[in-house]
Length: 485
Image (cartoon, rainbow, N blue to C red):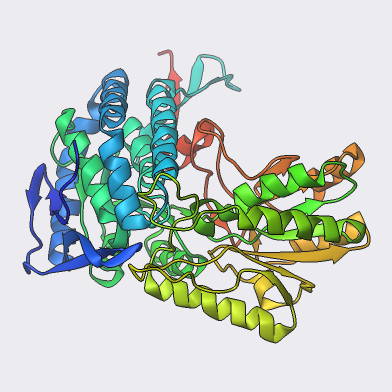
């Protein structure tokens, strides 16, 4: 079914779609055509946030005692309905976030895979039986849900990232208050609507739309919230961590990245560049796992630059609704200006701009920007250290593999890294010495739906999401000692 824009949405609290208590709304434009309004959404208050948390708390007792296979069945039904509505939802993602329809459909497919895996985890909430030091004593552990979980998600992946939080929370018996990024709330409302369709009990999942000040901060600080899972910038994550620490509640923070792709002693430079471009420019570079730095053997620099230019020139920039488009707009005017500012910083620092570096003009005045490549980038330049979160790639030449490792580590982040090499000793050194949570040898930074996802250093705090590690955040562990008489 085709969507009719603008879509008017509301909060979802205690099983009902309701406006904000102050009746205020805001609008979200299409980044490919800013004159087109695609979403009208509530601008919620602290009062709305409190109502949502209270509803989640009321629902917790029944939901946590619901047999795990029944919780799993509901998640399976959700994936079936999500698949049935994938075309409609992909259109909303493209209209409000900007990524191409193919990328939006890919994100939905990945979401389905992750939620299906997570549904199975509901029946794998197993503990352990341990030997006791004493005769007649049985020792075992069991996992129990925490309570109300605050889930706060970013705009770059408006369905897979929220479901990476919501699905394991529900599978393990928690209830959720969900605050999406304000510029991608249409997608959030759509998948919450699907949960409602498949019979999720009222109060188990609540959606509150609004600013960080009116929704995010009071949500994190609410005394009934027992854990916070957040994906976003390192700066915001640090402030969330401080509030949570005052309450002594756990956090799962997925934060920024400045990910390196090393090319050293590798005989397929063209293949490496193709893999890196996919990792660098997918979602117009607006991914925490984007490769934004190439660290390359000096003798291969010219080949890397040549192949990069060819690859960058092949992108078709435009509205993501056009099936021919391969690079959509960035998400907002403010973000476009941030990227422009970083490109100017790179020029001022003395880096050589070899491709791109400017806006793409269009009749719709969309937020389009060329894929951009700098070479002659020293590791101390700001464009080599700070997360730009856009289609900007830097190239730094090195004279040894040890130097490549050192430069890869010389940032505050530690999310992902790739290494392209035919030398297995180098590959082993890369795995052992590079300080990131996810390492890729001879491939880009694609993650998989059943594998733990997370980082080191200033890229993450708390257990990794997805896979077997998700339950380490979403459950508490109890230890039980039982005497036979």
